[in-house]
Length: 317
Image 1 (cartoon, rainbow, N blue to C red):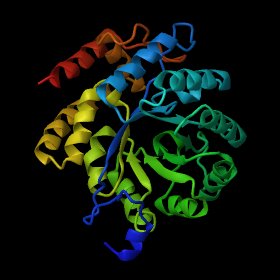
Image 2 (cartoon, helix red, strand yellow):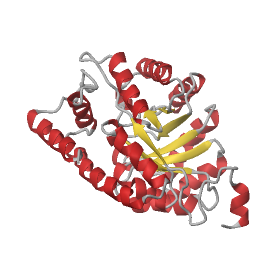
Image 3 (cartoon, rainbow, N blue to C red):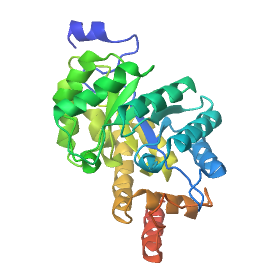
Image 4 (cartoon, rainbow, N blue to C red):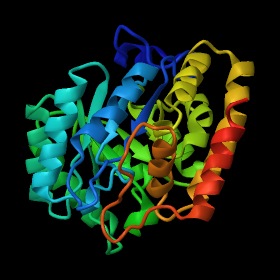
């Protein structure tokens, strides 16, 4: 490793001499459990958090896409922050989504979360319109320096209609030291790899997370920090075992778990949105009693239920 890079690292090295991430993490893009009339289901959400803690999960990303952030009012978002942080109480990391259509609301929600004890904030750029690089940069210019804590950039072109390029991520990190990393939710891993190649030579402690569970190992092997995925709501023990295997460089066990995760990825194709299948799986497992999504989302039908049960059964062995 180059001396210049070594000097930039903390006492606990981030990358090995071969460029592998030494301590990979797998965060849960946690679902938001709602009552039938659309309120926050306190007991249901607590049950999910406790399940993840008991399984040894690294942490949760609250109010990400799987958490239906775009359907929550500001008051509901703050209520959920209070509930999550009051339940977790430092037993796992809590990264809070502060993605609002207006930059000033993102700052308000982000600082509320930090004041309540969140570990970091994650923000997606405003969606619906396809934004230019200049507009995306302006969004982060208006938010990041005003948030009192670490921030992760969230790239999800499938929902925003625009992409945060590796070059722009590097530019933003150069400007703002509190940008800690990014989540890259793309089906083409080449984009995530390009972020690793573009940012890590200058900022080796920058945390790059894949947004799709199946890319966990691939990302870590490319220098990334791990994954922020939705499937770990359903099988947190499996993902915790995967993290242990990767960090122990047990590639045989890692490959075995990879094959199970590959099967689990079929969950993404069953319901639209994907979180509907996750909630049904949690209902089947007896973790929650309410599986309702925010309106107008409907619950899984009988045919979808059968497919979800088939997948859950397939990964037991």
